Length: 165
Image (tube, rainbow, N blue to C red; front, top):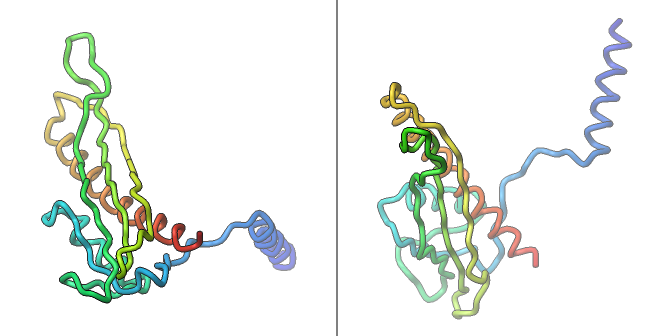
């Protein structure tokens, strides 16, 4: 029985390897962004709080102020909020979409463009139930947190992809 189980596990591992599956590794920033200053339009946002740590884990040194030797990652647009998605027969909104949109670009220490202006938009849909108003508020807050975490990862993936080109 254990020989059969081992055979099944080995076959499963080989199948995963053959299909190209692998765990996502930590992102790596391009050399031009190894020392970077973040210029974020909304300094009170979770993005402003979480992105520096994620960049540092990816190998960047994040500076508190602009410096001649530092690249600049600019995020002039960052908006997160609910938008009506559908209206019920009583003319009340029944579904919303939580939409998070960010625009960013990056220039190196010499001012040359490293990453052209890009836009990332993430969204999640949810239903509004009048009888569960407190639950909906909690659901909305959880969606915000999820989108904020996902946006940090999406920005890192875009930065890493730009470094490969």
